[in-house]
Image (cartoon, rainbow, N blue to C red; front, side, top):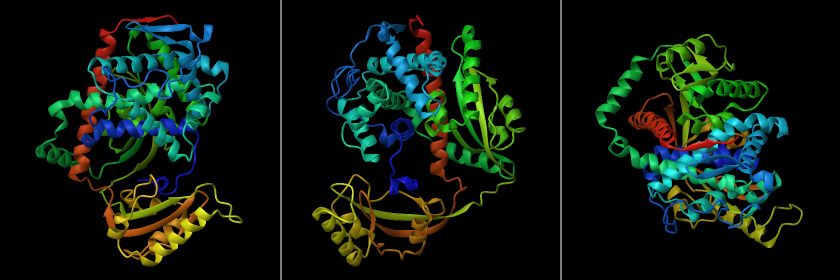
Length: 462
């Protein structure tokens, strides 16, 4: 749970897409409860909507723009698709979508598109359903989180010269790939108590050693003949990061490690948890630095060192809150000088609730007034922003609502249900179980992708 769950502020659609897809794929890949069966409405192949997406409107073909750059098991990948993907990344990373930049991005973007096409084909082959409703709901979630009307995401992508079908395909692949991994893991998705105990014991044995907060971008070399080209692309990525492109955005778009789902973040680790080549580089890096490409098994690794701490003993204390929120949206943006009748009614209702609510159970019993969850999950008080929000929740009595917080888009009430001090570095059995599962998903995902490429018939025409 992050502060943005409480106060959502609009961000650029491209950044929204990357964050949304990363979070979506992370939950599907690691949470068994989220590996749900396909919703009703999936077609026989389970592939969901066509390239035109839920709107059913396909981009108009345009001659040279639809030049075929690759054929993957008989399916074409076109120049217009790769240009859209390159433009999406360049705009999101702040590179500037110049013709020269798009040309430099094209080889690696094409490789990623081929991998995605292979995943979608495998999803179809295994008849794993991703319905029109799945994708439409994903799009709707992006729009709701950014206070956009229905259909606005498609319009904004088109205005930026990006084919909406690129977005639909990415969402389809993310959802379907997560479901495929869950199916392929089978019994390995179940972590035994002994495995959890051994993992915790091993981690505790590492306590007291220097720890490093590391981010990674893994770029595979699928064919030794292409190693020089992949190395040049890795150099280009590093150059853009050092010029200011956000490392998490670049990792989300280009890294082929499971950590890409968290923006490349590996968290706090010891050098013994890394392969020797990477550990040797990390041990010499200053905080904030980005490495040159590191040749590792299967490809190149780019790492950044976000921080270093000595002798951690698991004593990072924090104030954790269990809260409830009631948000009621306005029918239009608020004009304080001329509120509508609906806006007046919303504020008056919030004031009555502020005076009468006396427990979180009462909040849970109220009818839903928005898509924001009443229980947003655990909240770390020290990480909340703005400071006024942090101060309000710090002083709010447990079981008593806040005064109404009036924003341009609606009114918010908050209630603290519980407040406790917690050691954030404590390795609980559930955290250990999730980490073991994450490692298994990482290994399986790489193996499956390699197998798909080895069995595929890929004709590159670029």
